[in-house]
Amino acid sequence: MNQLDQAFAALADPTRRGIVLHLARGGEASVTELVDRFTLTQPTISSHLKVLESAGLISRSRLAQLRPCKLVPERLKAVTDWLEQVQELMEGNYKQLDALLAELKQQDKQERKK
Image (cartoon, rainbow, N blue to C red; front, top):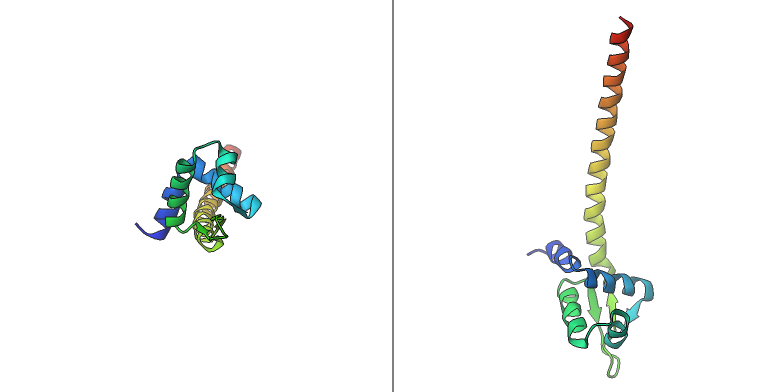
């Protein structure tokens, strides 16, 4: 599985997306803070953090007894870059469809005038 696949697989879970969103808003959070925030057990939160960490979406440091988590912006950028590519392609498709519909509408008007 490549890194982008791992990132999307990790983000497929709503709790993990919530953790990513929480870290994006707050910068860093400890496991204890995340347990309180998501009202889940510490092993469950730790399991989600391991998935996010193995996907490279978060990093964990050690500060005394705490292991604060923070986002890895570069990995998230790879995800957003891929999504932006898809969005650009879709917008291009819609523009072509709009142009085709306008052309068909114009042809229809011309045929009605005849």
